[in-house]
Image (cartoon, rainbow, N blue to C red; front, side):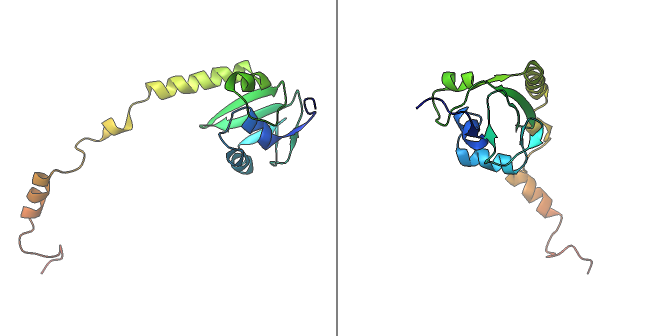
Length: 136
């Protein structure tokens, strides 16, 4: 039993370690986040050596060329030999990582955060004995 000539795209994405489970790969394919040779595909689409696959991961498209086929998930070094990422794809991924690294932390934009118990008591002092904000 040698290497297969063609493999389902969901199995290949799982074996090449783009997704942790085959069902996650299938879900991303159904969402339209995977293209083969520029076309949207179904999970049952068969991949051959030489096909160009675009996978949208973390809002960054990864373009890879299929170098090998496998139906079984193996160690990461073996999985990395199944494909080769294009130079443009690497540049886009590195630029996105740099933008993410340099972007400000969203939590730092919050000025005061949640009010403390003292702050809440101060807010409630102004209401007095009134139960609603409507004018009596």
